[in-house]
Length: 297
Image (tube, rainbow, N blue to C red; front, side, top):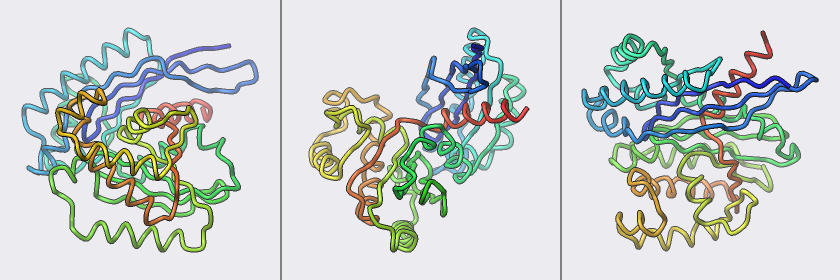
């Protein structure tokens, strides 16, 4: 068996992450991976972009520092392949091109800006999706800080997908078009019409945390009733109380409320009664993309 390490850098709206994965190839040429190390740095770029239109100098310096740290982690692990992607907060910033060039000059890391559809495609490429029951119909929803991606998966095939400019950080700062809720509702109604027994698949840091808090079983499922009960409790708590009661990071304790609102609305409009939470994210999708390219070569 051959084992090597790949890494993924994810520059998101609420945080920066680096995932180091152990990638193993068996004697039959089958390739898979599991997580070795994941480091998350709370740099809320969306706060800048969605309110000011650009990333501030202070946060640019924090990005450079974080990526230099990530670079050293990659070196220590002797990573053989890596990729760095940035999503809506950096992509939509007026000074994104300057920042990407600065990152390259200061760290040697090339960052690629990707849209919401590409982000959803990467996440849904993870092996978990190969193992879902092909006879079932799924509405896949990924809620990030700056955008929400929706995809319809029927008979194991993605038949519709769309990215919406609504996310936990945007909602927190009231920078969401008032018509966006109706757009999401209409899209879901139109594209799930006639589809029976729809299940939701939810990804994103907030739904992962909600699952950890609410689930009494290890079945990767949150029911609608569990989510409603959680909402009734957490909405009564102050910011500080949320941090203490649920041991939340400060940068999670505020965005978890708007994210919860998105998931509950998607459940209501789709008629689904439960969410399957695979606990994967963009970083996993980047690793899977590197594996696919390895196999192609």
